[in-house]
Image 1 (cartoon, helix red, strand yellow):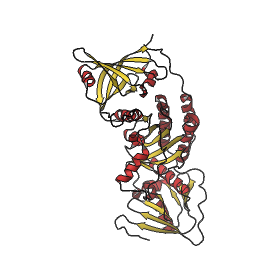
Image 2: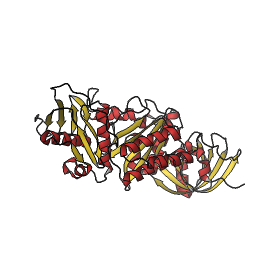
Image 3: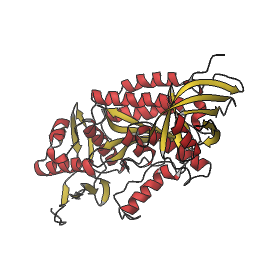
Image 4: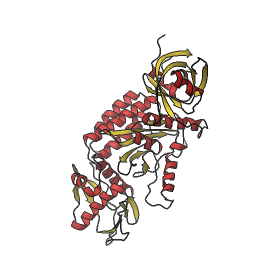
Length: 451
């Protein structure tokens, strides 16, 4: 019987059934132990989790040979992999992927705090054989992922604005992949944070909510530039917990009025985050989650990675930041009452009529627009002039401006603000103001209000 290809038996590497690893010392004395994780690297290599310096570890370093038994949890077929040691990695994308997955396995087995990854041991697979049970090609997934990618690829290409592209992407995940909880976050490379620009399936949109680079599955995927996937709930990668910890570290309590609530599920069992690459750098993250354990497998990861790549390709091609259709009409303001806008220079946070709107680069953009309107009465602006304004401190890639404009427009609509932004033509936007504005600026250096 022909040896099964390694990529066909990836179902064995999900960590559902512990693998058994056999090694020998320099005298030929065998040793058998359980290994927490066997990770698929490519069609010729796997990685084993290195957690303890024990006899197994010494044997691997001594002769570099091992055999591992892995089982398909659905067909109950036991496969034997003959391995030749290549190297150990203790950081980088592969290590972080295994660390996240191991955290999920540890949580599922009640071993959190015990399973600590020290390194990822890379092995070349020299042979694959069926040790027991039938060799059967894994059954098809509930949906045809190749067809889902093809349909999504076409639909995404029809978008003409960044906002429409993001909404189409989340719509495709629901229609073609059966994913009901997802979001897109863009990266702020200056602040090393990610901010939510689109979401679906949540009670609150969370538009504008942030997560730090390196926090949770989303933050690690952005930092390392690789997909991160876990199949079981783990506190180490819980976004709600991560955000609460950040707030505590920054001295922010429940009364902090500039922290937009994160929209994620309260108790997800499966999570996957895929970097969106533009110009060779991570510009954002496509994220999905589910209350079902093991919802996302290797094949799902491959398919969703193609969707994320398509997003990056279309962003790089250039899209307008504001939707083609006009925004809903601004909220009415009682006659004779001015709209009050307060700006804090320390972090560019903006409050409208004492309600928090946004901060950071998006806040700086909004303050520029309303300040210009208050000074000259001007309501139309171009993307180009915003991009070239040194005061806004935009990173080099253009998507940052387009994404900030989408974020700003959606926050204004969501907060039912009397001031709105709408498209005025290709590369142009219009500030819609229902009446007079009263502007207050709190400079970063003085802390005093300036009218």
